[in-house]
Amino acid sequence: MNLYPQLILDALSTVRYPGTGKNIVEMKMVDDDMRIAGLSVSFTLIFDKPTDPFMKSVVKAAEAAIHAYASKNAEVEIKTRTLQAPRPDLPELLPGVKNIIAVSSGKGGVGKSTVAVNLAVALARLGMKVGLLDCDIFGPSVPKMLQMEDARPYSQNIEGRDLILPEEKYGVKVLSIGFFVNPEQGIMWRGGMASNALKQLIGDANWGDLDYFILDTPPGTSDIHLTLVQTIPITGAVIVSTPQQVALADARKGIDMYQNEKINVPILGLVENMSWFTPAQHPEEHYYLFGKEGVKQLAEQMNLPLLAQIPVVQDLCESGDNGIPAATDPASITGQAFLQLAAKIMTETDKRKASLPPTHIVELKKQSN
Image (cartoon, rainbow, N blue to C red; front, side, top):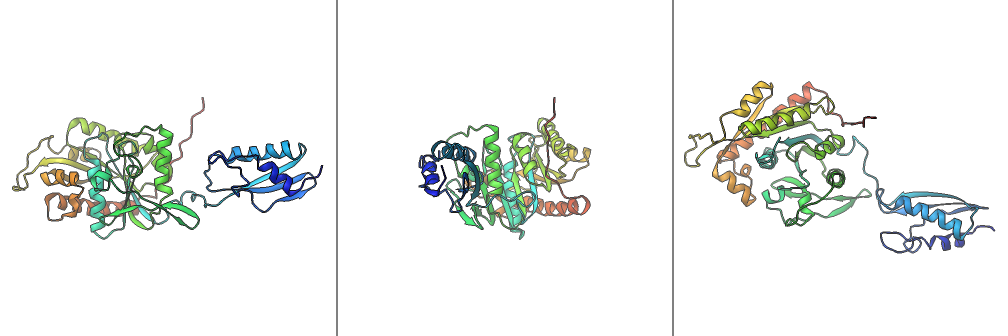
């Protein structure tokens, strides 16, 4: 029995695409490049995205349908192509980004996100092109801190790829998983799902040209940190801690993670947050609520720069709750502190790039038993 195009199309019309329930012929997934020679047939199936989860199963089902309804002796060759261009391979994932800075902390509650948000805003005020990515997939706080809880980014087709367009606030491009989920519901994802979501926010977004890409990482050390260092070459890390001894112990763990020989991300320096309490009306008064200069001492012990000491002032707490970062007010005590931090980060980044080779993507190999 000879094969002919309509026979093949009739067989393929029995194959349904799991995502819609419609058959692949009516969905126009069969390209017009069909070639038949005797019992040999070749054609191409069209999918929307290179990451289509049903691609392999649909190809197998199409081949089985031809054998079942056209000829069991048919020699079938099925190619695939996608309408959306694939995500660029590393290291071309973020070609327009000059510096990637990870803001980290060994534990929660030390004000890491406050530092990350204000650092991003301060860098923008200094004339830099800045992006801010909220990497805390399970507990995103950036939308609240920037009063962007109602933000719902949309995508745009750019050069064959559907890319998420980051929101913009205070001159900073911003993305957070909090823009895409119900803020009143907890996010219950397995590690792989969280890592894939993070990769999409990095690689499937139109970040464009940036001088600084600030990563607000989750507290502690986790799969998210591994995903980051395996996905993008982090220029350097900034470690945030309070002066308390328990926080300093965890800060050491964060430093050790980045300095691990397999990770090898340079530490730009340490930020001491909540260094002292200063009444707004009496800026010269310092009250050391959480110990004195603990992070400064840790920086000296580990031969790392102390980038800033951020005081606790009432306006800092209020600005975080109101979604107006302190860095937007350069006349305030904390606004000045964050602008000085941004300037110090720029200096330390330049030093790091002048004295050390570029950071490489981390390749972690599984150990065999």
